[in-house]
Image 1 (cartoon, rainbow, N blue to C red):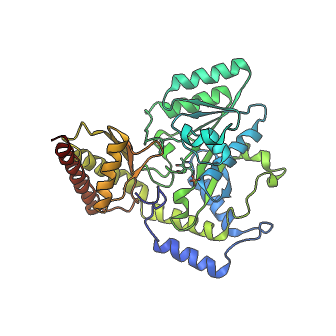
Image 2 (cartoon, protein in one colour):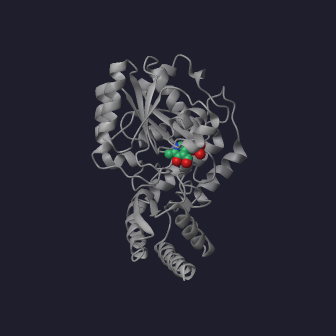
Image 3 (spheres, rainbow, N blue to C red):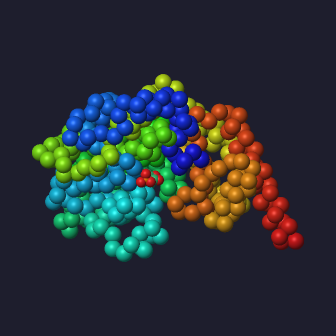
Amino acid sequence: MGGFGIFNVGHRHPKVMSAVRAQLERQALHSQDLLDPLRAMLAKTLALLTPGDLKYSFFSNSGTESVEAALKLARTYDPKKPTIVVATKGFHGKSFGSLSASGKSTFRVPFGAMLPGFKHVPFNDILALVDILASCKMTGEDVGAVLLEPVQGEGGVNVPSDEYLPAVRRLCDEFGALLIFDEVQTGLGRTGKMFACEHWNVAPDILCLAKALGGGVMPIGATVATEAVFSKLFANPFLHTTTFGGNPLACAAALATIDVVIEERLSERAASMGTYMLDGLRRAVRGHGDVVLDVRGKGLLMALEFSDDETGFTIAKHMFDRGVLVAGTLINARTVRVEPPLTIERAQADKVFAILGEALDTFASDRIKKSA
Ligand code: PLP
């Protein structure tokens, strides 16, 4: 587990480090009123890199901010359609808008009323989406946007069926709703494509990025949208701003990171190492079917599903004791994520399989001792 998915290019990649160092010598932070070439270069690069007609970027400092900007863009696009459909088990961050869009009660209940206008439907259930879109239309609460992670990360690494996202795109077009993809965790090569939505050839109207975009060196978030969506801010771009967003250090890091992901073919590497690791993990858990219920993933975003929370926690602890860090998801430790840097080598992956096997054997023998 590399920093909850921020180390796609590894730790302290020399190209990212030297771009940030060089920029620090020139100028660290910027004057918002002045044009900054790095911000423009990054926006242009993202326009070229992202799928479909995505063209303009708003820069911020984190994943939750990139989602907040997406929600506000959707609301300004058509203020008469304030309803936003989201998925249960979705996770979009912990500020009020993104939390209201997220699907986990533990993080919501302590804060009382959430923002109005969000409707949750099960992920990967196209009939549930049809139902909500149709019933909102009937009640006059027209849906302005559908917000989804193409592969749910914190919800337990849930990979949709091949039909789901293309059908979501068609429904959004039919009902006049924008499609927002939150690729804060899946973007920048993680799942085996530069953006996970490219597995299904589906382009959103708004794309949220953060985490790995800063190369594990600088924090940065980006909300990339089509011209039609962004044009609502043209008259007054100050409607949505953030002081540090798109600062020169963060933009230098993001530009260098994108270079590295392309030059080192890290998306392709995530695809092939993902297949290698899923096979290896599946081999490692053989014979422990009562404890490990599923091993799944896309590229190098993988998960082990255990029989219960405590078992997952114990295995993760045994692995940590042997030098391998894995992480629970926001559901709990029943689903444990395996999400290494995309630079992971086969020998390192082999070590993970061996240590997982040892951890499972230790767990099994402890259980026998306890019951004796
Ligand atoms: N969206 C997704 C899909 C995430 O996985 C996360 C964080 O895990 C976020 C948004 C929130 O990002 P941040 O913690 O940078 O605010």
